[in-house]
Every structure is written in C-alpha cells, then in structure tokens.
Image 1 (spheres, rainbow, N blue to C red):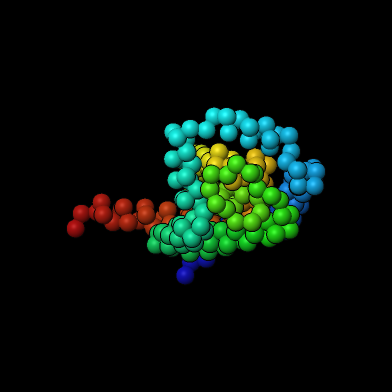
Image 2: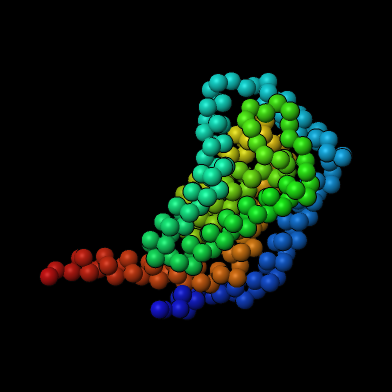
Length: 234
C-alpha cells in the first residue's frame, strides 16, 4: 500500500512533526476555558448570562420552534446520535477508501463522548428547571453540542471544502440553540460542549495530519485516473 504521508504537502507534514506542541497547547487552552466556565459559577448557581439567556428563551417559546428543537434533540443524542450516526459516517468514509480519515473520525467521536461524561461527573452541575425533555445527570458540558462540534471539525478537516465547514458550523449552532431552547442546558454548558468537541478534534488531528492530507491526495489521484480511463476510447 502506498504510504499516504509521502503524498502529503509540506504544511501537513510540519503539523505532524510538531504535534506535541500543537496538541499540548490545544489541550491546555481547552482545559483553561472549560475550567473558567465552571470556576466562575458560584457553587452551582447559574451565571447571569445563563439566567438572562434562559429568561429570553422561555419568553419566546412557541410550537414553531419546539418541533425542530425536539428533532435536533433526537438527532444529536441517545443511541442514534452517539452510536448510529458516528458509525454510519465512519462506514461511509471507509467506503470511499479513506481508512485513516475513518479511524480519526471514530476515535475523535469516542473520546469526545467520553470527555463529556467525565466532566459531567466531575462538575455535577444541575440542569435548568424549565426543561421540555428528559435528560441524564449533569448539565455541563452539553453532549449534544460536543458531538456536533466534533463532527463538524472532523469532517471539515477530512473534506476541506467551504460548504462542508459552513454546514458543520450551522449544524453546531442550531444544536446549541436547540439545547438551550428545550431548557436542557444553560448557555455556558453549550459553549463548554463546543470547546470540548472542537478541541478533541483538533488535538487528535495533529498527529495524523500528514496521513490525512496524503490519503486525500491519493484519493484525488485515483479519481482522476478513473476519469481518464472512462474518457479513453476502447
């Protein structure tokens, strides 16, 4: 099998060589931001920004927004969001002959979900009282938003196209809004989930950047070769 790193560009190889620094700084920044969100809260009492945001949400609740919010709740959580969607995306990436990308995405998803549960148990933050759905223990961070952010960043790295990045960003923002709309999370919970999910994806990307870039280049060459063969008369 062709080594994908040989097909990678110099920038991707530099990222791989410097992955300890990039990963370390990303992890420290992520921990500091997550710690800040939690430390500034006063013994579990919601922050002012949380209560103000929640008051606005409750004031403007209507059936028009409840239906899409419940759809996002089902799409991003539970067995479907945590297991079926990641496995389906992983399988799809394998089928286009991108095994390194598939492995990267799957590991990032698993670690992101594990990190969410770890922080939920560690901080034990109470959820808002006006919830429209039933949720598990722990409000910080939001698992739905963390899953969405991990998916968005990973797919933007695997498929570096503007529309992929924009679609991922839009999906993550809609998920963030839906979680607070349903009263399942405080606003800072969703911000924490976003930072965790994106941070995990970036940290894990560094050591395999060259492999992902080279694998993508090799896949592009194969598509070009197939296109040439189809265009050649018999």
